[in-house]
Image (cartoon, rainbow, N blue to C red):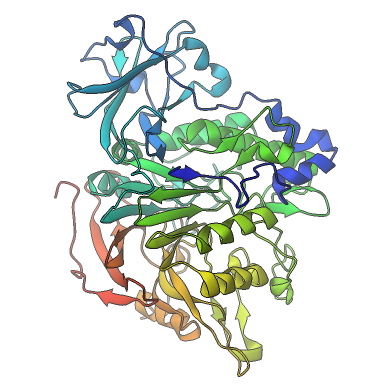
Length: 589
């Protein structure tokens, strides 16, 4: 298989520590178990052959935006297909109208390779008029295709999708655009306009595709919400709580014209982070319930269960993600699983983890004071089963490049040294130091040929070397493990948005302050927004960070290469590459 989410021992019903497992023990409104199992979760559907040509007939002059206001997208690639996604406008919806889909090798659709129809009863208000059509088994491996939907005589815009190579294909190169953190209210999506023009194989989104806020809570304190970016939730709340709230946010984000351009042109490999449900949310062991620290009543188990279920349901509806979801399973913890491996021939394997459903709370409580609990061996971010699966997958992988799609920073950001050293970001792996050491030691001892970690969340760009130890003493010796490459946020607030740095304390000075206490980091940039491109060949891995102006709501937003680094094959090191300083790149170039 090219995309796999089975456990290391092949038993998908093994007892799993984590969010969905522990729900079985709670009686709070039957928990999220009942919330999900009693809901019409939108699962991918298969299209059927059309009896006539009628569903595929359309008026070429008809405006697609009136019928497909969120346009189209593809994701969840396999070697024989993708998931194609769209949403019908409620005003254009007819309960007797099927949805047609066509896939071709050419943009003119002269060479149609697949066509099918989704029955009308699969597109309903209970799924918010969304459709996820699974083409697995219908397409050829490692090929680009063009696709479109037709509904009631109107064709969507044309998109491009890309299937995976087979697991044993000899592939010479792979390029991934890596994105994260795109608060709609804190900027415009010029990055997606440039992404549409990038010659990359796939897009990896590491989470925070939406922010659950409507009141500008997470925007820059030095700026108002950007013009035209106001959001009013159906509930009237500042933070999403109801299913209608979360659906409204997804529909609003996906209605952005620049974001649509980027997703129309590339196939998405999607993970999630915290803002799809609630900032810094975690699992409360004592209450056996989610904890939503930023929400009123976030410590109320019944309320937290309902909010989490609403966020999960809407995310599944709106993302073309291939997840494991079994509503008929008698084992509650088998209902939902996002962690999986994706193989790109013999060149690279992408290992996607879920670092929210299973994580314990902050090591020092909500007050986030330093307390020494960060290295408690019982603390977990991955949960027992996912951790075992991850280590088995990584240490037995025989691809040339093993790549971890990781949500939060693994390398520490520390101040001080020795007994006075303190790690300051407990929502990252700094809050789970014993588990981090377990992972890094295992990878150092039995790891793959090349281990690369791509990371989001922190709203900055970082490149550094992972180690088994970071605060070395005379009795310890750190071994290099791999290279971590963090992508900047698309729009979400970074240090430059939040702090008016005094005098000549510019980005270089701030970066140097961080690097002085963290020598494992080769590159730090707290000031840019944009995305990165990570490329793999038989000789090396290269990482290039692009800054895109988030203040311009058009494809003319300027883009420039900020930094580029090379990781040679079979070496754990970063070599800085030359970039054209200050050069601007426009989408039309």
